[in-house]
Image 1 (tube, each protein chain N blue to C red):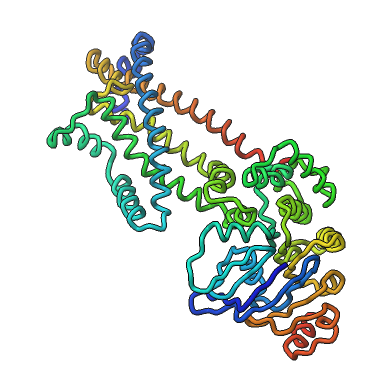
Image 2: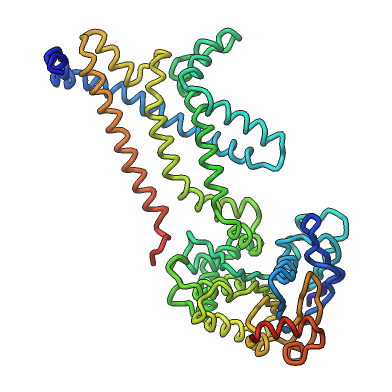
Length: 246
Length: 233
């Protein structure tokens, strides 16, 4: 499903990702963990091409893009982006559109699908994430948890092969975290392929098939979620998990 | 103080009968004022949008001319610019067919610079996250601009744009110096004939005020419409 090879990303002289190699199989849930500044979010943004890597290649589904040196065609990037959906830490719903308008906007404009069928499909998705009764509300009148669930539904409307989550609960009050995590867990049970940047270790234990621990731009340790989180092999992973448990 | 009070020419302070009799003539002149203001603002907005885009462009050959143009227009008085257009350009063989055309061109070109800055700052104030979420949803640049950024920027730009519009309305009075028969020019004509300057200029000021009140009312309605999504169900 996802194959990342020798990925490298720098901002000026500051290298934030170095020699990243990993793969994610269809239906797998991968959690990226690590301290702030370790490169987790940059890696996720590279998968969605919000950041362009300097070197290496990314393959998602049937689309492979090689970043080594050559200038990329817009079409190539657009094709790769088709396979993934992104859920942001700050939700980024369109504030001037109601929840249902947010949900149908991209398929209406990008995929040029019919509004009526999109509304029916959108309402089904909103029921699934528990947001149906808020469909005609504007984002500004919703809680953070509700906005995040709407944002998840918005990404799902584009039928992505893989859903990318960038710390989906970090901007939420503790009591709102659970409602979002429940939706993500339900998606995991349905077999949705997901890559999730998170600091919620208990959630990662419950939902992840694999966990990658990142530090200073490298994937330091990766493997089965239980193994990495409960019996880490690398010293840096141990230290990070120890810090979190204190 | 008492001397000053005694010297006031009360009979020339305000003559309601003259104001009333002059009203049809002044309202006709006000139509010209409104016409010039509307047309000028329309062109100033369109040109302002292009200037704003050029100013934000990655290409220096678009960015720099826009920057210089905006700086020049904001840094020179409208009156001077109107003189250059109307009395200066004939020197190089460019002559406007009427003072109104010269007025519209001058006001449009001048206020486009102010609009450009308002539009640019409004576009830039829409959060980067909006661009990113649209990109993640596979929307292209123009789709994002049209459907996501411009509607949000419009809400932000409305109050300053209407401020500019009010300035345009009042700025049309400067066109009287290039013999455009607008409201101030009309008031000036009657004042010259009757020597009732105070009456005529106060009446003209009141008409400008009414026009601006109507525009202000329109602004409120538009703002309400564009603000409907803020903290409402």
